[in-house]
Amino acid sequence: MASQLQASSELGSVGVADVYSDFGRSFERFNTRGQELYLHWAPLREVPKGFSWLKVFYPDLFPEDDHVHFEHVYGEALRELRSVTYRAVDFSSIRRVLDIGCGYASDLIDLAKNHAHLKLDGYNITLAQVEAGGRKVKERGLQDRVRLFNRDSSKDEFPDQYELIQAFQVIHHIEDKRGVLANIQRHLANGGLLVASDIVSTVDETLRHEESEAHLLPRKEWAQLFAEAGLRIIGCVDLSREISNFFDDREYDASMARLKQNITAAESAFIVGPHMLGKLLGTGLAQYLVLTLQKEPFLSRDILLSMNQRYLDAPQAYADIVAHADAEGRFPLEAPRSASTAAAVRSTQSTGGLSLSADPAQARGQLKSFLEERIRKVLQLAKEDTVAFDSTFISLGFDSFTGLQLKNVLEKELGVSLPMSQLFEDLSLDAHVDRMLASVKRAAPAAESPPAATEPSLDVDAMSEDEVNARLQALLKS
Ligand SMILES: C[S@@+](CC[C@H](N)C(=O)[O-])C[C@H]1O[C@@H](n2cnc3c(N)ncnc32)[C@H](O)[C@@H]1O
Image 1 (cartoon, rainbow, N blue to C red):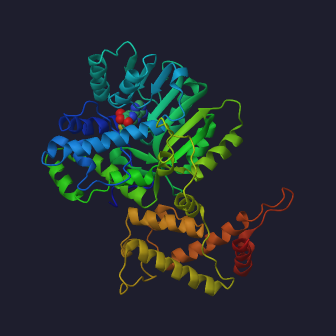
Image 2: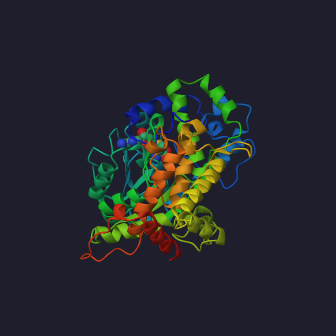
Image 3: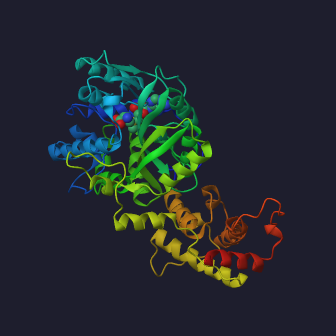
């Protein structure tokens, strides 16, 4: 796990088209029963007994399992997800649709079948998928309405103007997010809609998994990028729990062992990505969101940014949306929040849970016991295990995944940012505590009411620890 998940941009890119070509070879070879091939995860409210996403994606390799049932569960879940995704779209007023990472063109084919007036374009960086998708389009006699292009959505100008653009599990693969969003901005009609399903990092760093070409950007950066592209979020649904259920596979090791006998090393490295994503979603380090955005060319970037942030900070739970279907089965853009989901939103927003003493020695002791307790929890240490403060995080057994969990706790509960690169420095826990105290010290005045522009800025480093702690106390009480 440690070597797989990278929270920095140090590793070079292997190219998403290569990754998908490798993965696609086995996916197509061992998935010969499905009518359409979707490269999409499905939201499961419950995990059926014996379910594994590997069994759904590679059914021919698991002949003894109950495919009909699992494929049915997957198909229904995906259908429900698409209804939620398109819930704001009035297709009668849409003429042209673009899918910016169209896989095997399955969603375009579905739209073409359901709405005979639509003209649909698909971009896809992976040639083999475009060729396979093109064959399917032709077999279904849709070639006059569905065009597929083997192109890069972040670089190659889209061929037309559209009222609806869709991006299903694509943008996290694209490093140049600004490039793809600018392309969308140029080719989406004013008032037009972008619907997207994607994964965001809930910590303040981009999470990377090079083998599956995933670059999960922090939420606040998404808010900024959308605002820069003149896009306003009008709907935001959190499916993290349901998608993490999709990856909840008690027989993962056994299934992977079987799979590995039939696929290449690159393909199995790719599959680790989704499996790890399930863990990130389950532990709250990443969020899976379905977003509805509207092109707003006349709103200022600042206004768009604050609106976008508000939606991303408090997404609606998928369970709440699907619980409020109308008599015709249509889902609302927003729904009343159930008590449990409202509480969950509050807990993800809370920062600064620890109130440090004004006394420096006491503050240090408090921080150490806070840290020890959180380390024990994240590493699941037994009572008799010791947490020595002269050891490093690595020697305690932290890897990139548990490191991220701790980082998340520190950000949420202490308001302290701990870059992953620092966490894995050859530094004792004691030295980290010093750094954290200093960083809490720096954070305190900034979090207070900002001084008037004419006031001299506060020289925090010149303040005594007592003064800083006193300010921090006041802040935490306010
Ligand atoms: C997870 S799959 C999703 C496919 C499809 N949207 C679906 O839901 O089945 C991601 C797709 O995005 C494509 N893709 C990734 N980066 C791209 C880029 N820069 N331009 C166009 N397509 C891209 C991949 O080839 C792949 O088909």
